[in-house]
Image 1 (tube, rainbow, N blue to C red):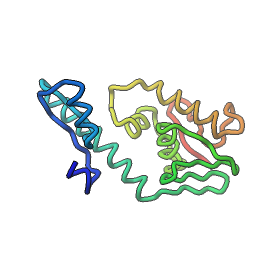
Image 2 (cartoon, one colour):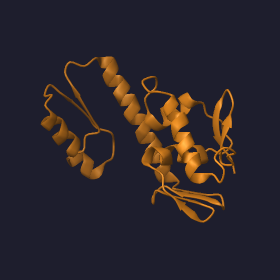
Image 3 (cartoon, rainbow, N blue to C red):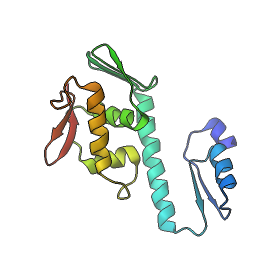
Length: 163
């Protein structure tokens, strides 16, 4: 709690206690992860790397919190998206994914790169998650999701944001 009161640095709890109440208390007091014994050093390192990726990504959002392209405006501090003067409601991961793409206009990202950047877990996730989230984002921000003007598919490669 003392660390969390003055810092947002990632915190991993390593413990021999494995009851739900211990985990809930630790996470409630500010821990980001809770690992119980026995744990492999490689698993601990993987968790540290994942937390640091998410921490760095969050810091990037804090540094520049607005993307304004006229008909497309995102505000990270307000967690808002406005497209053609209409507010668009996105869930957290949709927002993060769109933010990442819009913050790097014209740059093409593979599904793996997007998954690593948003979920922070290299090979543990399902890449179809990206496809589903892109489809949902398009349904919300595009005039015609089958002919997107913002989030474009680069066949055989990945996705990019254009405006």
